[in-house]
Length: 207
Length: 207
DNA sequence: CATTGTCTAGTTGTCATACAATCTGCCTAC
DNA sequence: GTAGGCAGATTGTATGACAACTAGACAATG
Image (cartoon, rainbow over all chains, first blue to last red; front, side):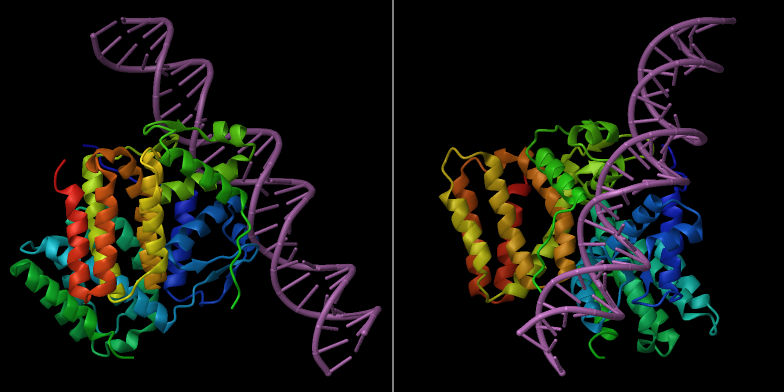
């Protein structure tokens, strides 16, 4: 078996860089991103910029209309609700599929989350949180589930960054995910599914 | 409210054309699609071709590796299973969300399906079938559900074209979908969900 | 005053061309 | 027969250009 080592393409690198800046909040929602400007800023050709923008548009981080500059997406409360609406069945599918299994990668992410110092930036918490869910999805071993979840992941993360108030105490977040992993690892499918439901309900029913 | 009328872009038109040819089976799985060739064939520039290919790759119709021509995806049985695996929760979500509603567009698609002459090409059957499911998804009104389903739709369709043997008698297909729409329109969420499960189980448990 | 027509500047959509990096297949040498 | 290397083909990226389109300002008209 050959290991896929990832030669970075210019588009990929640029997409990564932009994604990081958007997710960190450095580029505010609504900001326009003219292609020329990015081309000059990063020293790449405009077609390269276009492809990178297309990637981010597909991820839901940017929006683009004909003959108008790409804009950083504004995430409304309605968007977050919609996001949860479609995320739920996928998370449930993940949990029931994994029922009875313990996912090492997810446990590791939880451990890193728990080990974060109290004054660590919220964005790191979010990053580990996403890594945990991502690990679960990958463990299922369904390429399409992974693709679908990936599409939602970036947008979810963008939303989380803006909703940090939901979890005033970070320990609650850690504990909740501990329960989730336990329920998946221990119980039959039904238990795992309920744990997911409880988890998703917590921060989202009210705002 | 502004109605979105969409002027066709060159990329969009090219993507449509290629999609049609792939889905109709005119271009066999495994066929390579060199960019130059397409560029010359359709009389558009290579960057335009690249963007169009990127769209189809995202839809799962084509696969591309670095420095290799794009290929029409081969749909294995494992792929179809995986496809159903992720489609199921989304279809269930759709059905439960719509429970108690009758979707005019879906009924119309069903009617068109029933009206197809016995010797109509199978691909038309497939097209109306997809239109029906698409109509249901759209009726839910969740932009993200629509996006996710759209990603799976093209691939599903590619698979259906190769599995026409599942439904030797077309009337069965029509009847089954009639039942599905009825169950959704009539019953509470649970009934609708079961109807979906029954529908998806039929052609797929065995092959 | 409100509406409409027009102009201008800026940005994107597309094209043409070119070159470097890389893969593939074939050919040669051992 | 296998290893090594060469040539052709194809993609990845860059450069430059022009047409199409949008938005905003401004003048003309009712």
